[in-house]
Image (cartoon, rainbow, N blue to C red; front, side, top):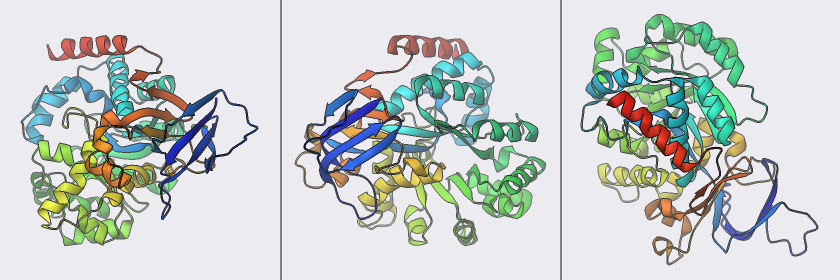
Length: 425
């Protein structure tokens, strides 16, 4: 489909480029033009959209989530992480079927779309079902490998890499990863390090989320999780750490030297009392930070606006510094850094040749007025109510409260509730 979106303010998220008035042309799944208004275009369009001087910008990238955990929303709250995982989450997940994951993923995608999220870095149990849902809905998904001692083999991991990392239209892609040091044997981690070396690919994992996790790893290995995993060769080709809350001085140096991304999840870390990641320190060291929601069982919502505000607000508080982690830096984390952390450089900005993953932000809402600094409004006062339209790969999937998916809202809600009630009683 060829789409023209005109009469918009455009925030491309390119470095040093300010918001300007103009229009964007989409041809297929790609941006063909992003610039000043064209008075007499000779192009023909399947659809023309008057943006009414609202803001068009790249979509947010949820750089860490577990989509199908929607069935656990508000089920296991107010608990410590280890108790939460072992007594409530893992036993419930053992009852999931592929059909459950199919509908629970769709429910999550609906929420992502309302939050202006155009792609997710999803770590969960059923990769063929993730692939199926992404392609049926048209929602961009990066599958993060989740092998651990409870499931998966190195042979299957290698097959997953070959199967999902070469999708010609990049709607579905793949990154090597594993659940966490504390759920994964040394033998498995060494095997993953060998695969990383064989294919020269990065590795992603939950890491240094709680003090207990770090202390337990020190007791077992004499090292922090980051130092231990690095000693096994897991980070020779980069990668990323989900959470990265509790680090010592040597850990920071490893993260910097290995070129790792840190994906912060402030709402989840607060709710589970895991702590507050040292974002200001990461930025001062030149360590790239992206933002994730984590899963809807620990958050409990999939809302990038809330994550952005918490990312900056918490740093200002713990650093006793109102200048810590400014709004534009947070916006970059949620958009550009997320794309790069997930291996989606073609989705980072609005520019000719990039993928048409974009959102239209309603500026005609009280929380966006007066219009003095739109970027700061997005971070400090923006909310889901401002998302008018979400476009993924050149397809409008959400607009003015309506979803354009392959299943109806009513069917998705009904199926998700059936799954939750059957599993959780």
